[in-house]
Image (cartoon, rainbow, N blue to C red; front, side):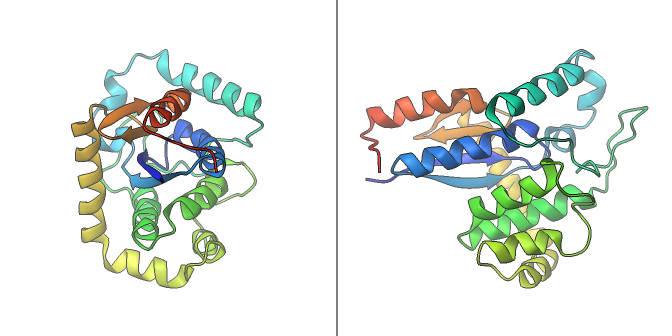
Length: 216
């Protein structure tokens, strides 16, 4: 019996990126499938978030994510450019967010077309691994779609044409995450129970084993 769980993912979340290899291993080992649900980053969802957050949090996040990447052998560097448009001095987040919304719509549409995890894995690697400059330029994201069996040019075209519908889908994902009991990412939800953070994946597996999860 396949066990399906929701994986709420933001392309601007380093912890979401760092969780991808762990979920890939989980799916390879167990009869389980992640149902991808794209959400916007918290900086976009909650206006003024960075004006309110404890100033110790951003530097700790950078230290912690580098450490997690190093421990797990995951290539890691903050994306260039940053997926969100933000004034570094004032921390104000721009109303118009072309980068994060473009890749989020592509992820949502790829999920709808049955290739969500594969596309998200490839696109987030391009963005976060440090192996690619200018992840947003040219056909780099389209190439990620091509690599997982989708037509990248068509995906880009359709994501742009269907932006309002995809934005509504992303907002519905955010509402569903809130209803499940959390606001952050990566968030995993199984049978209505939320598991927040890549350090709760073992707890997710434990719970699914209680429901009959087996190794492949």
